[in-house]
Length: 270
Image (cartoon, rainbow, N blue to C red; front, side, top):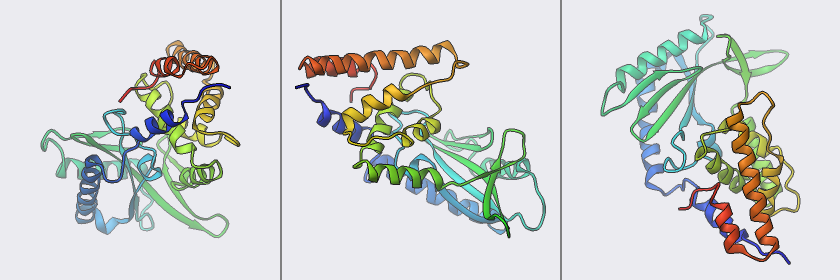
């Protein structure tokens, strides 16, 4: 019977978990509360809602020591009923807000990226996403964020979280740990995958009957990039599959310690 490193992988995924009682989480919480207070003071008259979404809300964010691109996504829904403003108008408002409250303070940076405004506060990064909300008789209420043509596209900020929660519950709480493990590989190997799309891909996989070990092996096997992706990214995925196949071979030969050696060719060892 093949050896197992199930408990080892479970413990490793827990180390990649940004725990609710961690000092980093406390700093994020305090900075978010201050950010919301500043937003309300500066733009409260034209904001309908502001809330956290993304990986921090989905509980799949990694500590910054593992993922230097870990950030907190903030959706800012503006009151769009009075004027038909463009996404660029709202981004400009958020940029001016960021400059006023954060630019060059204690090393902070404010960047107008796309489609967000990014505020870097030392070890905490916030991505502010401008949005509008519209209601129609036929489609109900929908949220819109900027698209890549400087227009609007519909979105549901809770959609991925709901699907992930359902999948994680259906598959015996192994999906989030597998996501954290593969996000740790992704972040320490130059991000061959977009982090959000990686989460989405894993969330949609069928882990029926799996534990974390077999689920991880299955997820690695199913990961794919398009032929149009760069050779560098394709090689990193090939390397992941090669190393994980060696992990499996070592376990089949009842050598879990050697399996861990191959495992840490792709995952950080904390």
